[in-house]
Amino acid sequence: KAGVTQTPRYLIKTRGQQVTLSCSPISGHRSVSWYQQTPGQGLQFLFEYFSETQRNKGNFPGRFSGRQFSNSRSEMNVSTLELGDSALYLCASTNGQGGYEQYFGPGTRLTVT
Amino acid sequence: GNSVTQMEGPVTLSEEAFLTINCTYTATGYPSLFWYVQYPGEGLQLLLKATKADDKGSNKGFEATYRKETTSFHLEKGSVQVSDSAVYFCALSEATDSWGKFQFGAGTQVVVTP
Image 1 (cartoon, rainbow over the protein chains, first blue to last red):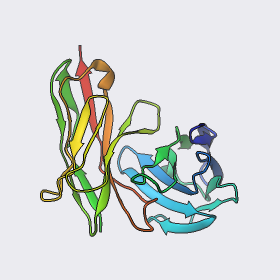
Image 2: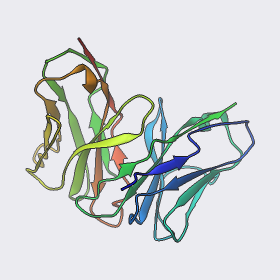
Image 3: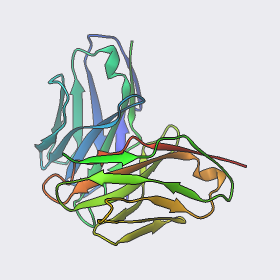
Image 4: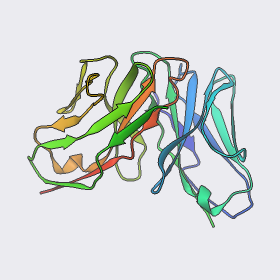
């Protein structure tokens, strides 16, 4: 079974631009979560989508948004990029079974200049 | 709210030494507990889990026991190898409709020297 895939793996953007990251969960998984990882703040939860609906949201500004499609693939969008948005963005999926473990993708490394 | 506290790193060990990484948690309900490992340049990999009190998770020589009375889930390995060098994260998830929302500790970097 293929794992969680994320595209692109690396991205360089300029302040003020917007960016869209993509995540394809493990086949059969209906929940997709997004996390931001930085050296200073560690792993912070952004949001979770389940069956195309946002079910949980972390404490991030409205510039961060996401969506989920009917095939469970998910995208997250960051508008008006700031230098502080530079981070590794991780996507994880789960099927809600067996203790609810999440399976993570390799991440997208976003650098804002 | 929920929170996870891990011992700060880096933890530097010699090969074949005993490893312990402390993890304590605060939760309102009965969470599932996890240890994840992250190697440089990669995402997180599930190392082990425990879903209820007194459960012991184990994998690749690592073990952790869910201790409700002390709200702890310490990670141990009896004999580490250089390949165990990585960052280790303790995490929890409530078994409610928030099971897609994990709370992670700050991570503990482990460096194993030959």
